[in-house]
Length: 209
Image (cartoon, rainbow, N blue to C red):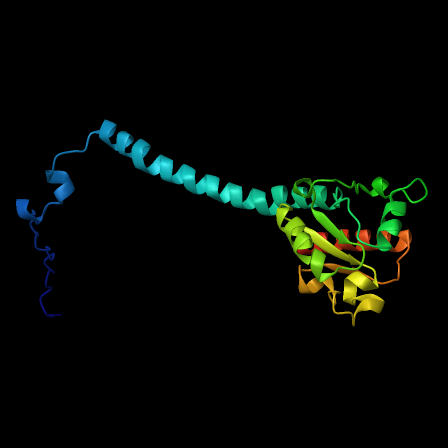
């Protein structure tokens, strides 16, 4: 029985590709260029990078400390140790003096009157303010250091009281200095003054001053 002659498949040989050798012109500059000494890199880092990083870190820490530690601490200390100016204008000054006596003892709240406006942070206007004394009141307010607060004690300081139509009376001390708190009464009792001081402490805490 005869058939077609068998054929033997020849193996396929892949062509050999020669490796591409880059020319000297295509090399990286950092390879062909001179190496930077390690000491020079450390000197540059110590002279420029470290001081800049330290300054940025200190600024960040100072900002965070002021907002979360220093300012709340000063606010707590300031509102619990108010120093009102030791002075008086009219009959409300009698109630002001009584509030610091043995019966009501305002000093147990940390409120200590001082005679010098440079040592005070609270001005309690306790009486009728006339135009003749207005410039003296403004001078006392301006001599007080910041932060400072003002309480208008009684109807006369708030809006002139029964003398509001008189030509010589200031119709409210807020025409002269900024007022933070008003206490009603003619005159208000020492309990009302103590309540007003506690309300002012809450106001200082809310403001964050």
